[in-house]
Amino acid sequence: MTPGTVAVIGGGVIGLSVARRALQDGWSVRVHRSDVPGASWVAGGMLAPHSEGWPGEEELLRIGLDSLALWRAEGPGSYRDGLPPEVVTARESLVVAVDRADAADLRTVGDWLAAQGHPIELTTAARDIEPLLAQGIRHGFVAATELAVDNRAVVAALAAACERLGAQWAGPVADLGDVAADAVVIANGLDAPTLWPGLPVRPVKGEVLRLRWRKGCMPVPQRVIRARVHGRQVYLVPRHDGVVVGATQYEHGRDTAPAVTGVRDLLDDACAVLPALGEYELAECAAGLRPMTPDNLPIVERLDERTLVAAGHGRSGFLLAPWTAERIANALKVSVAA
Image (cartoon, rainbow, N blue to C red):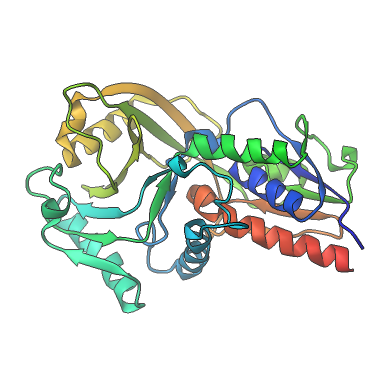
């Protein structure tokens, strides 16, 4: 049998990655997407399974590393084939701690990773690696294989690739019964449970800031810097014109208004780590909703003979996009063979 028709519901990084992969396999694909920006629009774009790792999340680390390998592969047929090289904005992560308690948490993660043989390098001289760090920051580790990407550029490039491959575009879907296709992939993040009740996906809010470099300021860092600051986590992700700062994390329904407290904490923590950021322009404040699951693992599986789901990626949507696309592609191949 030859591939038939697939409806992909969702136009973020997951939906577009799934759609592009299906198109490459010969499926006729229709993408149902909204004009309202979702989680992909406000993401940091970190591909960071090591520096996001935590004891007890071994399975998330494993699939994250598998997906990072797909991101790092180059050449025809790779995930990055057709994506502009400049979507990659950093090629290393430095994780640091501000106080002693933060350093203890950092060592917990570092020791856990090192015990499993992962390529991270502990240091007590973090400012030798990144001179822009504040005085007094010493403890950290380097994750040399991690990457960061420009989230908005990746989504635009994936949409353009789908267009070139012949994807059709349509509006959002309210009922799966209204979708005419041989296979349907639910990939619309937080809205997945509205199409398949019972999917355990919930919104977790997070503020994200964009700081723009100005003439006369210290240069943009060349690596991702993640920090623990008095128990809070902050990340600084390079862009060609500045830095993305994120992200708070708390449950507040579907509220996407940036809160003063969240923005203040991010600015305070970012400047506590890299004081030079205080001279940058505050270019954007936004809040997004991560689609989280109870165990922090994505839901990527078949639901019935026609329906598959790729949702619940939480804070790891960009990292896990290649892995998800391959997993769904394999499931679609099985349906063709059957």
